[in-house]
Amino acid sequence: MKDYHINIFYSEEDGGYIADIPDLEACSAFGKTPGEALREAEIAKAIWLEAARAAGKPIPQPKYKPVIYQVAT
Image (cartoon, rainbow, N blue to C red; front, side):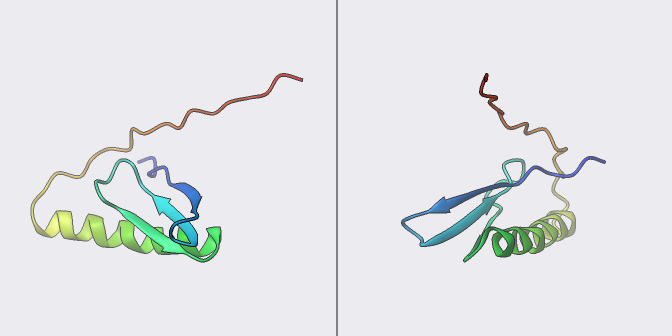
């Protein structure tokens, strides 16, 4: 199975980086650095999936594809 896409962006309001997994509702994490946010998101993803399985909820397939822009040179 493909893995879930993780968006990482800086939040001025929070003073750090947010890592968000669009395919998993309300699954996100915070870190002072992008790497820390990514590590925390991987932990949050594992917990999210474990909780969904335990509750008998469906596990969504990875579908999110970010829009990637290329600048013509």
